[in-house]
Image 1: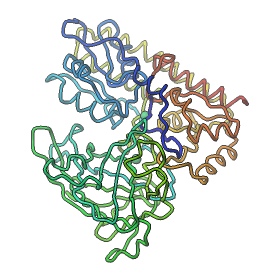
Image 2: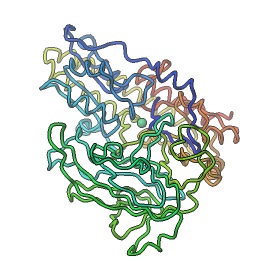
Image 3: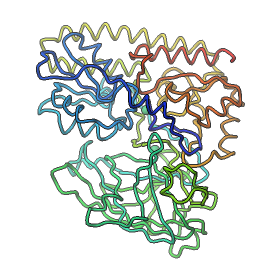
Image 4: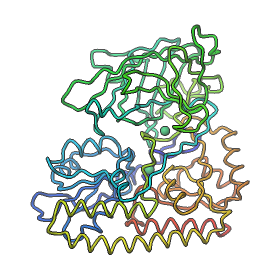
Length: 528
Ligand SMILES: [Zn+2]
Ligand SMILES: [Zn+2]
């Protein structure tokens, strides 16, 4: 599922559609597998889009396969044993990185590529080829705090790299009820970061209450509390630089929550955090934990450090919600009883950094990727240099035409109508490069009934801007979300757009970008 992990589903408990699950399970992997017997250069990519770019440059001299199958979500796909075999046979590997891929994919590459095999992060490397990067904008507005966990710093001074992991372990929770922090995965199944209900087991290293994050990343999760009162969570951080050495202690900290009670009533506390994006943060350089919060919502520019010894995280009474009937939420309690919950606010596993990783949505960035792929293949296979140069030039000419086509096509949309309303935040580059405003992500809260205020906000955005259509990735169009519901109510079209992955209908990068431009033009220009 393209981008399911970051799908902002609307404010409902996630619904599993058996059909979608079936599609997911049957996602078509690229046919090729890598082999030691094949005399061609064995090229491994993470995603299908990168596979297509590499195949265009490599031509007949290479065999290319991708780890993430078409139709699967790059943000959450975990490699299989068969995938590891491909890694072992690869002569060169291309990832996007910037935390696009699930960390397990990156670790599989970094741990299993043979010595000396180039392991290229295209999004990072392409900057030297004039690719432009932009920050990831998180514009979720909730009426409660949006709370996650974060690692600040790269840990390079400690020898950490992109495969390293921070282990964030809850060691105790004191409070009147249970505290459960959990991530709702793409199809609604919860995975637990903290669960005070089954105790904390020091003998297994707090394994069941540990969240792992790569350096310089953060993740979003839901926080549920079964009773009102004050809760104190002890969190311990250790940095696992690599699998062979013992994790390095990064400190321990107590975080205080005022649940349904006045935060000012907690003794010794001078600050309350009850709005904006905030993370329980471990700072690698300072080896300490604190709260990093952004109450003003300005991103990195307005983030501030709060000392957990004097700061209460407020969980107000408006965070009360009824546990739904769906059995996957039975861990919270009996359906119909109430819990306090801070929402994860994005559907699916959502680990990311400060930079938007979806660079290819600007065709000029794909040209930079192509140039880096060309130069990398020449390094691996110098005899093929002339072929790679010729293939890359021909493909770049196609991409230049594509860039013009996308720009001209979008330019045919009246400027006042160039609004992309969608749920997956994959289109920042498209917006910036081709003059489309990314307007009104659905206010997301996958673990609660839609709030009327959220719905009203979306409806007003659509009416005020006179938006004729909303956009969803094809696999998700059938799924009922606040976005599709409001679209039906307002009699808007629901149109397809591709983000991170191909499917049966769109199988190349050029097709994908043409399709997106045409879909925007058709749906935003004409009335339903
Ligand atoms: Zn994405
Ligand atoms: Zn985030």
